[in-house]
Amino acid sequence: MSSTPASIHTDALVIGAGPVGLFQVFQLGLQDIHAHVIDVLPEVGGQCLALYADKPIYDIPGLPYCTGRELIDRLQQQAAPFKPVFHLQQLVCKLQQLADSSWHVATSDGTVFLAKTIFIAAGVGAFTPRKLALAELDAFEGSQVFYAYPPHEDAQGQHVVVIGGDDEALQTALMGLEQGAAMVSLVHRRASLDASADLQAAFNQALLSGRLHFEVAQIQGLDIQNSKLCGLKLATPQGAEVKLACDMLVIKLGLSPQLGPLADWGLDMSRKQLTVNTEDFSTSAPGIFAVGDINSYPGKRKLIVSGFHEATLAAFGAAAYLRPGQKIPLEYTTASPRLHRLLGV
Image 1 (cartoon, rainbow, N blue to C red):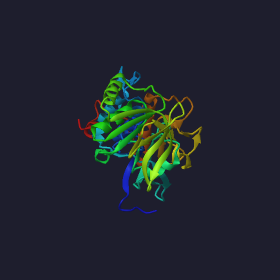
Image 2 (image 1 turned 90 degrees about the vertical axis):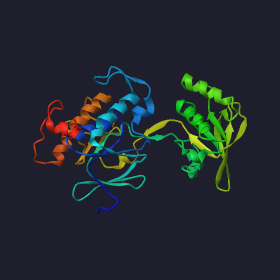
Image 3 (image 1 turned 30 degrees about the horizontal axis):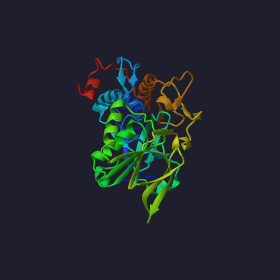
Image 4 (image 1 turned 45 degrees about the vertical axis):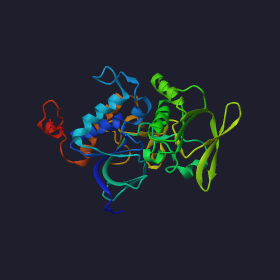
């Protein structure tokens, strides 16, 4: 397989933009190895930001307390001197080793990388949006069905329906009002909402406007006319059927981790985790390393701080792999002129 003009050549490709993936970028930078980063989510942060952005973390060295969001912000600042390039909302769907031992990597949107090394920092898998069990919705994804709020110009004058009952669902519903939707309906299977007090108060106030509605129900079917989604058929807890107009459906049911194509890459695995050599956290394939919750080895502990240790040794391993025969010195950021130059300090 030959390179094409559209291929992105890189010494390192990091799969996963969570805290361990971000720290991997930093450690690679200290080895003067530039990285591109892929993540299936629409923003950097991985599970840390998606699941506990505003919850406290107490076991990060040197930080007695921080939220998931604060940790991601700090890690991005730390990695910034090495100018990583992020490719978000993309899933790696193809991996193939080339004759020169580099790796051909293709993503779900057609982006192609030719990478000398790969670092899998995918946590427990790629986090993808939870979907409703209605196959008919698939035909409308990207046009009328979304898992992240679409550009506001698409929503103006529309009947927007949001499915979910947590903070993100309420925020999405309120955003629809701010961005010009004619009507917004929040649909949740229970009358109680799992939202913060401030958001709940804002939501209750918006209900009084008449442009926001709350339906306690579950979707049972779709109203499709002329190949277009026009409405939803809902069932209430009492068994009644409710019909709801819908031009745009935004589904906010959280995220679900999936191994996806990774399971088919031919890498040695144990209980759905990648087995690694703890000397450098290399996998069974040359040039591919695995760090964080995705890997497995005797004594493994699924902690962020453990992932930081793994990323450090993996970066040294990558430097030795990319520069065979060269001595890889141990240098300290407090005193090394070379590291100061790389860091821009």
